[in-house]
Each structure stands twice: as C-alpha cells, then as structure tokens.
Image 1 (cartoon, helix red, strand yellow):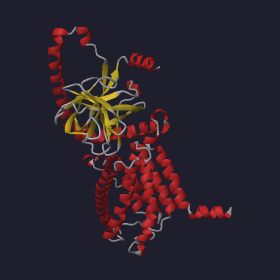
Image 2: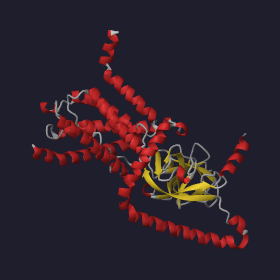
Image 3: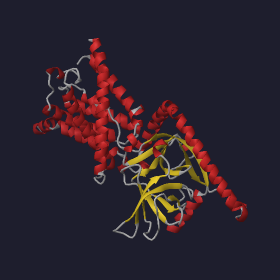
Image 4: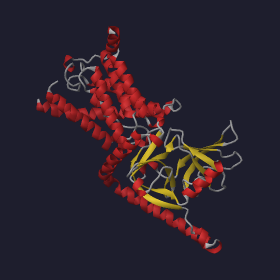
Length: 174
Length: 273
C-alpha cells in the first residue's frame, strides 16, 4: 500500500463514520433494525494486512462512533469482534485472486458472490453482537435475531450500492 | 521469561481482542450508574453538539410533519380546555382549581432511538434551562420518559421504550391502577400489569397517568389497549397496549417541572426515615 492508498483509506473511514452519524443513524426501519454500513472500513482492508492493526483500527472507529452517538461502547465492542473474526474468515474463504494480498478488497479484484458471502457473514456477527451486548440478556433472542437479519441484509445491500457507485470511478482513473 | 514473550506473541490477537472488548463493554450504559459516570457526561456534551448540527440540517425535511403535529396538539389541548372549564366554573373554588403544580418547558428532540432494548432520547435543553435529573417528559397526548442525565445544554431522557422504565397508569373509565412496562421487543407493543381480572377491559380503552409520582401530571393520555386476555398463572389480566402517539416521529416535547418538588421530596423523605 502506498501513501496515496493510506490517505484514501482515511478519507473512506471519515466518510463512512459521517454517513453513519448523519444519515443511517436516523433510519429506524420501523423499529425492526438498524442500517450499519460502516464495517465496510474493516471489510475492505487488504488480505495480508496485520490482524492486530485491523483490531486497533476497528476499536478506534467504534470508539469515535460511540462517543458521537452516545452509545456507550456498543459500536466499539461489536466492530472489534468483527475485526477479530475477519482474519479467520479470510483464512477459510480464500479470496479468489492473489491481487487482494496487498491492495484493498473490492469488487474489482474479487467476484461478487464471494464478496457478498464474506460481507454478510461478518455483518451478521457484528449486528448480532451489537444487539446482544445492548440488551445483555437472552430473553429477547427471537427479536434480536429478527433485528439482526433485517439489519444485515439491508446493510449488505447498502455496502453493495456504495461499492458499485465507486467501482466505475476507480476504473476511469486507472 | 522467553516463554512468556512467546506466549504473548502467539496469542497477541486474542489478548488484544479481550482488552478492547472489556474496555468497550465496561462503557456500556447498562453497567454504569448515571449518577457518577464522568464519561457519559462528556459523551452527552459531545453527542449533543453533533446531534444539534445534524438536526439543523435534517430538521428542514421534517417541517411539514412538525407543523401538522403542532396543529393536532393545539386541537387536542383546545378540546381539553373546553371540557374542563365547563365543569370547573360552577362548583370548585377558583383558587385550588387554577393552582398549577407543574411548570412546562418545551424542548426539541435531537436524537431518538426505537431499535434498541434500552432506548434513550436526547433533547436540546440542559442545566442552563434548569432541567434536573428525575423530571418527567411528555407530549400533549402521551408520556415520553424521564430525564436521567443532564449536561450544560443537553439532557438524556430514558424513553418509555426502555426495559427499565416503569410508568404508573390508571384505567380511565374506572380508575384502577397498573404499571406500564416494555419488554424490549416491538416498539408498537407495551404491557400493562397489575390490572385485576375482575376489571372489564375491552380493546380501545385508554390508560392515563395517575399523578401519584411527581414525574407526570395526572390524566395525561398514555396508551390504548390493543389486546386483552386473562393471565392463567395469576389473578391479573394480560394487557397489550400501544402508545397514544407515534414515538418514532416526536419533534417537540415538554419537560415537566414540579413546583413544590423540594417540599414534596422532604415530606417523602421524612416519611421513609
């Protein structure tokens, strides 16, 4: 990764955090879930990126969101868990091409099906742990699962839209 | 010693995860008493500023809805004043009838959540507007919650959609008293406990506040009965109710300030001691 890539990454993180605060946090889906596309900042990191740094970045992003949305430590806890499990999932679901080793994982260098499975599994973990930490009880498990499903499907959809939007602009530049 | 380093190196990811998880879980609201948490106070101040910036931008999209709500509220209050005046004027002496136990301060909702298990609302009035912990928050036709934490310009309200919230309500037609609680599932369904099976409750009956606590004035509309069934395990009815207003769309709320709060508190303390 070059300096340009790092700058681009910081910009992407900022945009995702701001979009969560100013747009997606206001959408309640009638009480049936929350759209949280910001884990994309963790999902697109290169395959060979040091896992310890992934966890630290996740904690930092989560902490910024928690402090600005006054949610205690919920975003940080769930995003850190996602970052930890990402390393294991990448070992199981090997990306289809070698080009993801040192550049961002995106639709350009993987195929759509692989990317959807990878995103959806990690978002399920993140959303489920978010609601579980929030309620800290198993009493409402069915409703938590309902919220997790609605939230992860809609967040995966939004992430896909974001990537499709920026896929073309990246191509034009190259 | 070398083995220790080796162990740390071998398990550095799980150690990192455990440290970060324990830090963030310890910040979660549920485990913090709001009375003495410094972090949550700082967080309200920061998030309050962010929410009000957001509200400045997004607020324009809600203007139509806002004015519709305010007009409805006016109509509701006009009807209430009319019906009350006619009964007051003839028998009760003016003095006691017009003595107000509460003052109301209007505030704008700048953040509202309904998707969580413990929902909180942020409003744009704080210590400078002499808002204190423990004050009730209402809209004209419903109960919103109780102020749980106050910063200089913003306050955090525990919404009725919070599993720790408990509002004492009475059946409007007969006056029998129960508790309104939320189980943390659908925001369109609350439960009312402690209403005896001998009571005849039908779908569409309304519950109002009792006024026994000094959080809320009496006779504020609270909930409408959606479903009633006898609870076989106890001698009470199982009542599902829905809030009397759309909590997802509230814009302006009123903070209830009891006028004789110090007097009432000292009286209650002297009884309990």
